[in-house]
Image (cartoon, rainbow, N blue to C red; front, side, top):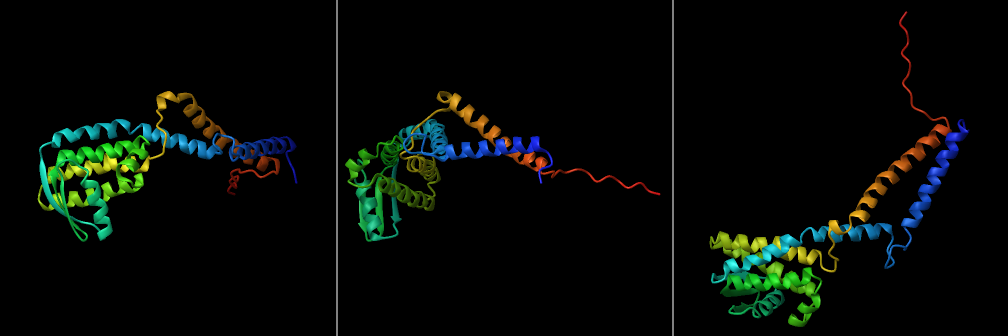
Length: 238
């Protein structure tokens, strides 16, 4: 039974408008067949990518530091086929010698050249230029990047075993700050907060108001039905 007609009508208007807005947000009305959640997700991903640009590009410049540093390691792939894929990519690097024996691979060459090649390929992926890797290696760009990641992981471990810890740390930095972001952000547009202040502010303010809107709608509906919360009066002692 409705006890407060005014509060009930207000609550109904608010809850109906809430679901109407929700229905619009779930419709493919935000470009490229996306709904509102997909639009927001794409934007936040793009802005997240934009925040890593300086890190990725800065790490790529460190290749010069390792020019002239020769490494010679033995690494092991999971399968013979994987070792062959690794070898095919490392053989494209100037001055690198590769010998494959089943799933094992002997690698000798200039660390600076190795670092620079992996960084350049990863930057191409990061900048959504996967076609360049497809043309270079004749393979899917994601697989090329994964091959760099998995092989460099083994390379870092081999350098640790040789107690070449500085060289190993450089490879680990290459993985975390260049290879991983390039793989994860491939296909994502790059955006910066400074260029989308209006949209970002609107989305954050809208989220806050929309959440409160639903809360007050429930509150007024409950008030309309006479459902309220109040402290129980204390009984007076005799």
